[in-house]
Length: 277
Image 1: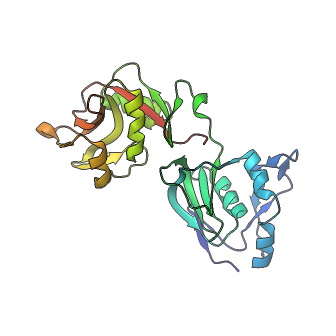
Image 2: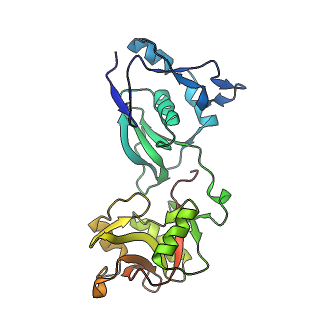
Image 3: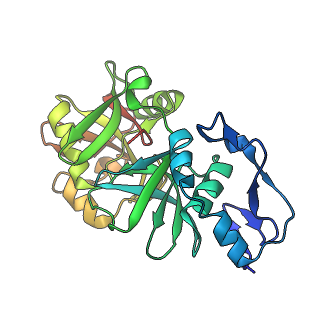
């Protein structure tokens, strides 16, 4: 029998496997997420394997709730939860059962490793050819008023460009009100999007308001890596001039980032991290 595993904060035992309820299919089109229920049923490993490897099952899932990303240069924004030695269908079921946390997943055909993620995002390094990427259906970027996809090379982002100026706090709050955050630039290639589309200085989602010298991205609260800092900031920046420059702008005349006083008003760019790839 299977060992206990932690799946997105819930412990599922071998006898608590997810089985399809009688309402599994909706007009023979796709899987109904509400059609899954947890039953106390003991299953052998062979029975479980047979259940989760039904022909065409993942195709049915993908037509209803999941979108497989076939393009290169995408990756899963991990939430730090993984399962191993399971089928792709079981990976999909557990993601769909936990949509509060799981918005996408990667599945390695070779190792059976299932990595849950917040969503699928553009990524400069192509994934392994044995890894499949799926995401729970997200709205297309253009479905949100004012947002559109901006692309530079292999990198895309769903952005909203402001037409008025705000200070940093107000700009960040406006983005959140639209279900977004101030734009993140976690790899240098994404900076090219601003270079091509911004003819003025704009706020982005990066600051060291919490701890001086530790710059944190708004979208996932991760810390800016020192190597990337030197690639995207103006030479000599950030310098915390007068000990009160805690927010970050993209400065169009320098085509790079700069730290400034948060009370300064600027145009700003909001980003929806997750959108249909």
